[in-house]
Length: 490
Image (cartoon, rainbow, N blue to C red; front, side):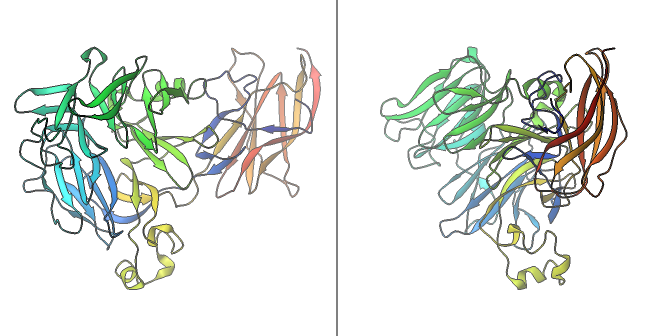
């Protein structure tokens, strides 16, 4: 490291040693960008509260392009109305979802399908239904649901004949999700996977499908009668440790026992190895693994996992791990929520906005937000008050730390001046230690002068620099080291 050089924050690599870490050792409340970090906004509610904690949700459009958003709690299903209120659309007597289960969703034509394993698969026809109803007599109960080609497919099932079969994948008649009677004519059937690889923990659809077991992944290909589908086990080293899978096109992002992976129907690629895998598992509150949720942020090109850390007493997710598939970088944020949600904005007229507020200047989020425009997919979350909220609030205060370095090899040094490279006001702290065994001693927080510089006094063999932001910024890139001198070898 030389005086006058920029110390880039680099990729967040908390799993690597602090000393000579080529990236950032700490990233808090920042999104990965192109060779920089970007701010993340706080949650800003734009709906009234649902009547209970939300487990999951789904967004859908009918053939005419009309948008609808649904959510589920342990006891009810909800639909978002144009007045930003959640209406209960449960079948009579509601539901009894287990605390450790959730609602899984898919769309078939104009039908939104939901399953929670405790009850029959639920169906809501867009533009027609007013309440959810049982999909069909004879349909199995299931934990996971998707659409593969012309079939509705479920995994980890229970039926009246065979009872609970956690390693089973089953599908409806071709083109008819109401017919589940096994038949060579309709092609409705099932496949029991090798139980030695554990229960099914997710099914993913599309032209091809994929079944995620605890310790294996099988590609599902339509082959027609008599087999209907072939199940080719393409991954046997790992499977879905956590039953939550985010899908982007033909790629599925999942968490195995040894970390984060991207699966593309024929292989898995590690995306967290040597980066965040160890940090995540050390911080995850294993008592609430079932509360981990993932979602795609299509605008910022991110995959985000919300999880309960060891600091979460209630089990609500309180941390976000943020992965950029464009830059292959990670970020992190501290946000309390119930679940993540990719919603479709409904669109509002001025008269419709009057039902929310008569003063546009007080509209939250602001009128510029895509929330009010209609038809756009956006990332949101249900806050701990059961309100759907966007990440459009005040930027969260961020902390970004460089790796640990020596200014002069073999010598102690005194760093006295540095400049945070952030395009808004930021403060700087210097941390120092002399050996691996010592804890880092942090100096006081220093503000920038009119030239953007910060006066420091950090004396030791090893240094690291911490940027603190309070408020919005566009890019945080690193720290420019401006002044340092040798101070001896001991």
